[in-house]
Amino acid sequence: MNRKRLIIGVAILITAVFITLCGFGIQWWRKNHQPQAHQRQLISSLAYCDSNDAKPCIVSFSVDADGNMLVSLLIPDSSYPDFYLTISTDNGLNKYKCQRVKNFPTNVTCTGTEMYPGTALKFTLISIKDDIVLAEGTFAIIGLLLPNPDAETTATLTTESPTPILLEILTPLAIQPFSRIPTPTELTPSYPNPTSYPNSSYP
Image 1 (cartoon, rainbow, N blue to C red):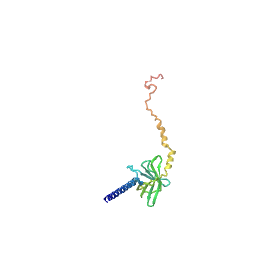
Image 2 (tube, rainbow, N blue to C red; image 1 turned 120 degrees about the horizontal axis):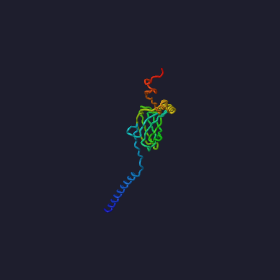
Image 3 (cartoon, one colour; image 1 turned 30 degrees about the horizontal axis):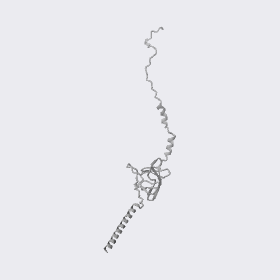
Image 4 (cartoon, rainbow, N blue to C red; image 1 turned 135 degrees about the vertical axis):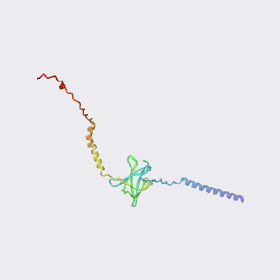
């Protein structure tokens, strides 16, 4: 009777140990083989460029001849993801198309609706590939560079008259040596001194 109880107790103990080990094994497998959740990238702070060289950052705002606002940015390097810019206002969300500047891969220009200086706005850079927020910040536009209507006319005038008239007048003087004014010298007469003439033979 005691032997039978001992066998039953050992069997129960082995079963309990087996179940415990199976539980630990299942937890370990789930921990190491379950699909990893997508980790969100660290969001950078977006602001005006300064001496700290924190990138991405905004260089300036300007308006083109068509009334579109151009936002100039610097990004860390050419491998930075392609993105678009959004600017949030009280009236809604404005989307800006961004393109890298040719021959300058770390310079980006975003084009969209014109905004006005003075009001705090929320700026967000969003990855085109997977819609992940790359950088964001809230600040006001402190100034807009406006197009110069006389810039084209000025350039045309400069191209048509590359040499100022003043330079054309002064150039011959610059390359020709100046004539030296001779120093006056005392003239020596070719005839003898009148006081040295002999007495004239004429009466």
